[in-house]
Structure formats: C-alpha cells, structure tokens
Amino acid sequence: MAKFMAVWGVVMVAVVVWSAAMAAAGNFNEEFDITWGEGRGKILEKGQLLTLTLDRTSGSGFQSKHEYLYGKIDMQLRLVPGNSAGTVTAYYLSSQGAAHDEIDFEFLGNVTGEPYTLHTNVFTQGQGNREMQFRLWFDPTKDFHTYSILWNPKHIIFMVDDMPIRDFRNLEGKGIAFPKNQPMRLYSSLWNADDWATQGGRVKTDWSHAPFSASYRAFRADACVVAAGGRTRCGASVGTDAAPGSGAAAAAAWYNQELDLTRQQRMRWVQSKYMIYNYCTDPKRFPQGLPAECSM
Ligand SMILES: *[C@@H]1O[C@H](CO)[C@@H](O)[C@H](O)[C@H]1NC(C)=O
Image (cartoon, rainbow, N blue to C red; front, side, top):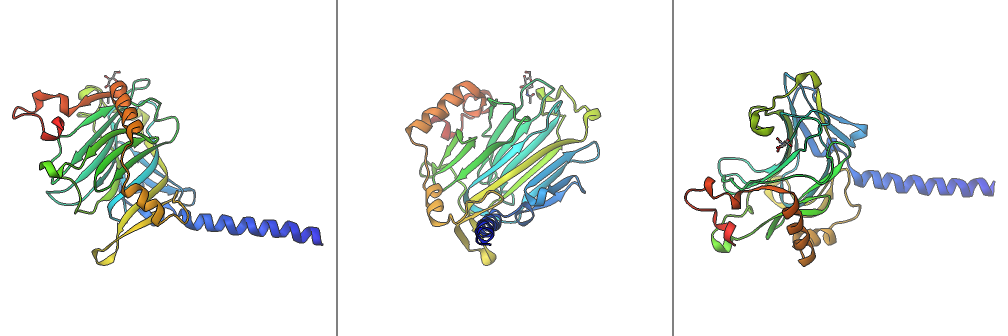
C-alpha cells in the first residue's frame, strides 16, 4: 500500500507539472485567427500545429489576435516541399493604413532541388524598398526552423535559428523613420505568385503538385501586447512555446537586446556567404541616390 501511495504520489506530481506547462504553453486557437482560405488553413494537434494550404482555387492565411508594440516573436516554419515554384509563404508583422510599418519575411519557392529565396524588407511610414535576400544554409522544407523578429526601440533584427541575418537600426536621429508608434499584428499567408516569384516569373506553379502546404509550430511572443483601451502590457510571454513564468526578466532582455560584437561578426559572415541581394548595393534602382541608411 505504501509503495502504491508513493508511486501514485510521483504520478500526481507529474500530472500537476504537466498541466501547468500546458497552461503556460497556450495554443494557436488562442493566439491566431485563420482569416482566409475557406478551410485551407487549419489548427491541428490540440492547437500545437497550424497548416496553410494553397490550391488552384485559393491560398490561405492567418493573423494574430493580439497587436504588438515591440516584441521578440519566434515561430518554427516548415515550408512547402518538393516543387514549390510559384508559391510564396509570407510571414510578417504589419500595422494598418497608408503610412503603415511592416517587417517582412517572405519565402519564395522553387523547383525541386533548387534553393528557396528568403526575402526580407522593412517598411516605415508606408515606405519600403529595403529588400535584402538570402539563401538558407539548410533545406527549409525538410524540418522546422525558427524564424525570429526582434523589434525593440533600437533595432529590428531578423534571425534564422537564432543566427542574426539582418539588423535595421533606429537612425531616427539621422532623420530616418523607425517603427515605434503603430502596433503591428503578425500575419502569414501561402499564395500563388507565379507571375514574379520564381526565377523572375519564368517558372510557373505546377498545379499537379497541389495542394501545397506549409506548417507552423512553437510560436512564442515575448512582447508588449496592446490591451483593451490601447494601453500596452509588456513582459507577457505568450504562445504555444511560451516561457513559463517569464515576465519581467525576459521582457527586459529582449527590450534592450543588441548584437554584441561576436553576433555582429556572425551576421556579417552570414551576409557575406548567403546574401544574394542588398538594396544598399543596387544604385541602379535609386537614381536619386541610395537610401540614407545605406551609408551609415
Ligand atoms: C531558384 O533556383 C534558381 C537556380 O538555382 C535561382 O537562380 C533562383 O534564385 C532560385 N529562387 C527563386 C525564388 O527563383
């Protein structure tokens, strides 16, 4: 009997810890609305997995229920496998309106065996034209990988599996707008862009491979979340992969985070090896001169 009780005690403790972890972990139903695609976007596995699909009739997409004003947003994505030419998986933060701010990841598919293009951009006050494109150092269709946006008052840092690939600095002091007043939602969509996406639009979507599908899991936002009435609450860690009991300490970490020297060097190394386009080195596009931040 005593032995039985002891074993039961262990089971009880395990159950309590597990349920606490589940409560902290949250699920996709709490964080996102599937906003288009008539059933082509799905939340599965008790809210721990989200999938988007694209077929000849329609793509699909979702958006966060919350709006964020600064945050570190992590998500694991697995992109459309096989012949994904013509498909685009967009994953971005954006505010509303003509003078909106936006922080973009876009994944441009390719024919089987050829590499995806990871496209990034930053819009401030409605103005973009800040494209930087990369190859990835792994096959993004085989496994899930973490794509992160760190947006704090000083930086917008794009990261892939925690490796910084791009740092858009706050240069307001030099007259360059920086996103800081307009809350943004997180959006993602899978759609057909075969008029331009793959090899400049020369390769079309092969619908015999449809439906195309991309998957999402392990969402985490350590962010300032806009609450009812427009006030923001910083420090909450939410999502399917939220840090339990994080809060003030985690918030302070991302809010002030910058790249130290080592991480800056790593970023430069990644850029030198994997960057395939940089608006700052494309003067033909800017007859009036390169954007001011390019020389800073
Ligand atoms: C697809 O593969 C071709 C050939 O390797 C490459 O030039 C192109 O940049 C790749 N990506 C896209 C999106 O076209």
